[in-house]
Image (cartoon, rainbow, N blue to C red):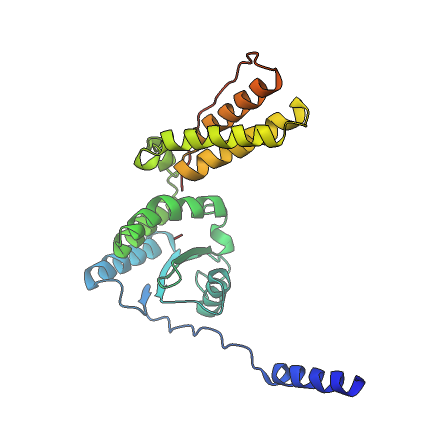
Length: 264
């Protein structure tokens, strides 16, 4: 028996011992402020981006670099961006004021990598806002060139010392529940609350009420994909649970509203 186990172990370990790690994604040569290995950008867009980067470097000294690849696999985009940044030595020596905008089209991933000299001007929170507010909307519409141009234009303004504008999301209306699903969602919340009230009839009111309310609210949110409807579902669950605990008496319930926003 021991020999059989030993033989099985050797069979399992030998392939692992010979297995080679997956090769890292290649880093292209740095020959221009815009390196597009996928031909995603048209010539006019590349020309505008190059002119913008060169003007920034002449004016401020900072180096703005754009890289578009199909995939960074097996590296994560963070790992690949760091490798590219180090290999290309972006930014001035002793100042370290380079910034890299990396786009991986097949991975649907993007990364802004900065040198130490620009971390104060472009911290992670600012980089994320630039991506989400200026790049992602255009990318979702299939306009890669427009997204990259908008994002790099904002990075240039930040490096020039201009403050980042107020968040774009503040000017967006609260999204309504999709496809008129709020009525079915509230009905399902009511049914869920009724069923759970019966199943949890043996529990005390303080224990039962939050459980029923949470389940009803979750059901309403899943059906409607809208946070305000989910909150109304919570209120329905709370009212149904409290009504069931008082033998036909009346208990007041409350509701709350809110808004939500939904890599590709």
